[in-house]
Amino acid sequence: MRIFLLMLWASSSAVAFAPLFVRPFFSSAITSAKISEGSTWSSYDTAVLRSVDSRVCVVESDDFKMESIELASKLSLDLVPKEMIFDSRASVDSSRWGYSLLLEPFCISNVDENKTYALSIQPLHNELSKQKRRPSKQKRKASPVKPFFVDFSPPLGSRLGKRLSGGEDLLVKAAGPRKGVFAEEGAIVYDLTAGFGQDALLLANAGAAKVVMFERNPIVGALLQDALRRLGSLANSLDDIDGSMQQGVSLLSDQLFVEIGDGQQMLAERFSHLVNEHGRCDIVYLDPMFPTRTKSAAVKKNMQILHGLLESQTIDGSARQQEECTMLETALQAASNRVVVKRPVGAPVLGGPDTATKPSYQIKGSVNRWDVYSLL
Image (cartoon, rainbow, N blue to C red; front, side, top):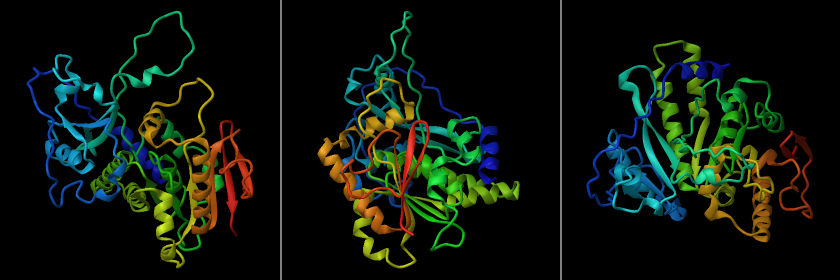
C-alpha cells in the first residue's frame, strides 16, 4: 500500500531534465578539486575506490557546479566541461570516455525549494546501439541513450512500478521477507550483489525490516547513494500532506541502506560480529553476474549500462566458479534463515553442476529461477 501511494505521488510530479544547450566551445582544461568537509559526498569511503573506471567522466553541471566538482574529486574521475562532451566543435577527443556522470535537475515536489538533482549515467557514442539485432530492411538511425538514474520512487507505469504494485513477485515468494528472527517487523536482508537496487527495493516494499545493499563498483554505489538521498528528501518534504503517504516513504527510507565494497569480503571480515542478534541477518540474497549470454536478444538498457560498468570485473570460467563457491559459503555462514540465489532458468546452480552444496528447492519463472538454500 505504501509503495502504491508513493508512486501515485511520483507520477504526478515532473522530473525536469535540463536541455543540453550548445554553447560556443572555449578551451577548458579537465579539472578537479579538493572535497570539502560536510559536503554531499564527504561520507564516501575512499578506501573502496580501487576499482574506479577511467572510462567514466563527470560532466560539470551549470546548476550544481560545486556538487559535480566534489563528486569528481571523491570518485577520482575526470571533471569535464559540458561542451567537451556534447559540442561537436570541441577540439578535445571525448572518445576516451565511454560513460558520463551528470547531475540532472530533479523535482522532489512541486515546491521550488525542493528542486535538487539526480545523479545520472549516460553512455557516450551510442555504445548501447551496437548490440546484435535481427536484420532489418529499413536502416534506423541510432537514437542517443538518455541519462539513467536509480529511482526508489518509480512511477506507476514503469516496469519496476508495475512489479511493486502488482501481485506477489517470485523473488518475494522465494525470500519470504516478512518473517524475521531478529526483528519483529520483518527480516533483515543482506543483498551482496546490489546492482541498481531494484530487487532490494522489492524486498523492502514486501515487508523486510532492513535491506543492506552491498555494491563493489564505486560508480554504481554512488548512483545508489544518490537514490537514497533523494528518497530521504522526499520523506522530509511530505510532512504537510497525507499521513499514510508520508509514513510509507519514511519507512522505505529507513529500511534501505547501502555499503560500497565487495559484499563477500565485507561479510567475511565482519562475520565475527554477526553471531549476535544485533548484527546477524535472516536472509542473504545473491544475484551474481549471469553466465555469458548465448542469445542475441537485446537486454534492457539499464542492464546494458550495468554490464558495461562491470565489464572490467569479469573473470574466466574457473575463477568465476571459485568466486561463486566462496560467495555462497560466506552467505550460508551469515544467514540464519535462508540464502536465495537468482539464476537464469537453464543455468547450473551457483558453483557449477559438480558443487556439493545444492539448493533446498527452486522457484522457476519463464526466464529466471530462484534457488533457495533453507537453513531452518
